[in-house]
Structures are given as C-alpha cells and as structure tokens.
Length: 107
Image 1 (cartoon, rainbow, N blue to C red):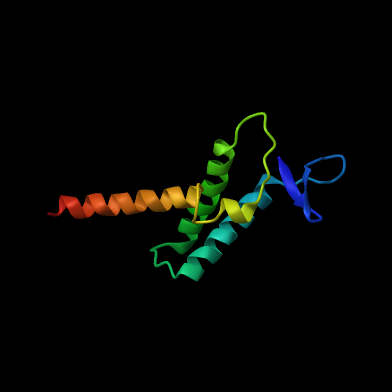
Image 2: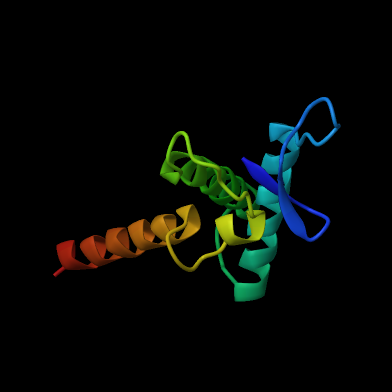
C-alpha cells in the first residue's frame, strides 16, 4: 500500500516511521464521511452512527476491491467519495433500492 508523501506516493515503512495506524485511518474516514453528509445536507436519524458506518464501510470496500499482490495508492478522499466505484456510493445505491422496494410494496 502506498501513501501520499511529499507530493508523491511511497510505500509505508515501519523502520522509516512511515506508518499509519488503522485506528487513525478509520477515524479520518468517519470524519470525512461526517463532513460529506453535512455538505450534502443529509437528514438521518443518527448522524454519528451513519458517519461511522459509511466511513468504516468505505475503508473495508476499498481494501476488498484492491487486487492482492498489487501496489495500491491509498487516497482517503477518493475512498470516502460518494461518486465512482466506492463503498459510500454502493451503500447509497443500496438505500435507494430499498426505498424503491418499500414504495413498490405499498402499491
């Protein structure tokens, strides 16, 4: 996994001190999701739980999408984006489909 370092991409190295802890990544992903929800004016019952689910889900989806054995550029802003092949977009699509099914059942 490569991380942004000084305007370029570099592999994480524990001996060089280029390490990012998973807890920090997840916290930052949740914060990015919270910010994106605020920007879009999302109205949800529990914003903290929703931001947690979207942020953590985004990181998990990104990790599962990456091919094993290949270097991956870890760009958290792209991972938490609601556009493209990302976890938040997949979650949004699922919610939309559930809404359609709910409305169809009422007719």
